Length: 448
Ligand SMILES: *Cc1c(COP(=O)(O)O)cnc(C)c1O
Image 1: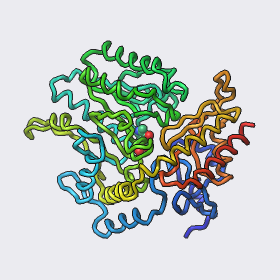
Image 2: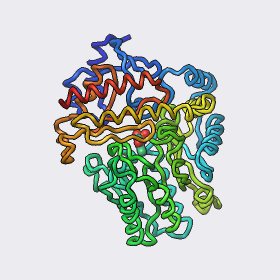
Image 3: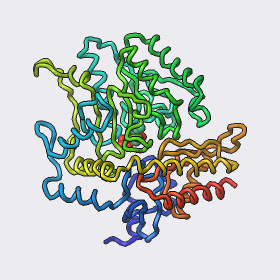
Image 4: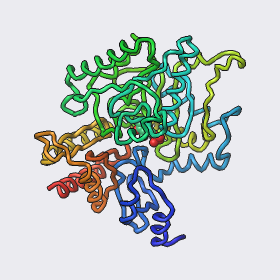
């Protein structure tokens, strides 16, 4: 094996890291992970870190999990990849059936891809083409939300709402309708029905202003992730779904982050008994092991694409690694573990504990808001919480807290001034307490 110094050297020489100012990266010593062990990651120097963000919000049952490993090994001894274009494979079929059973009733068809952005692109293209088949080709616009994040490809960015990520590429993006609801994101507002009404009115205004031109609405249900762990008002999803039905447009729910138990139920949609027309899933789908995504559609959407070959109603979209058997085999085992271990009901007391302990963070003078949704949380740091004054982003307070946490044994990644906590679902109570202690002390140290 290559020695540690060489790895550091090669990293800096050859790698370009995502969402990273490489000038800063080059000035620092990188953490290079070598192994995983349950909720811990171990670097090449032998340091152990609690994985506080589940390896970019993907990991479900911990790292190096014996049963997930076994599922992967069993499949790899059969075949690693075969195509779904013109042919089929066993794990892709079995997983499709399982996903249809697992998702809200009515989502009956599974279209695979390999990441969250593509799952969103597919949903958007399906919705767009759906209206052409329905004889309403003028329905070309999507309603989307301020602070939304749906991925980094051009289409996914077009329905995004994070200026710092998206403004640079403005002229590349397609036109849509961005709905603003500036008062709705703080934890204190989630139960405020006036805030919910404000959001819904903004959507309804857009619908009536662009009557007959809207193809669909896309949103992250209950909580917007990359935008800063921002909470929607309670009941918003349910009423938005009713609004979409009333206006006869498609509802696209992006469960890329929220799916697979992250919010305490398998899908965030279940909290408000919503069945969307299209649902996107990715991050936790293959338990954080492999890139795999799926877009689920109703029969109504799927059936609109049926026709004679010559009619060109086919959905002309597909990625080379669509329905990869290795990833599907791991995803099947992921779901099997949920079922065998009755994980979601076992998780409820841990979620309650997580929520309770996070309330302690409000005691810290520079914590402006603590937002929790199931097993996902954001602790927003502010220069002055009393006047809602944020830290200037140049102060890198989130980054500094995460660096402090790293020295104390936890691996995190902030969203500007918001410290994100999103451990693997299988984290034990004592590991969770250790993680929360580290984060608390790190915030205290950095912001004192
Ligand atoms: C992460 C994320 C995406 C993008 O997924 P990638 O796999 O990174 O392309 C899309 N939507 C949401 C809600 C996400 O959190």
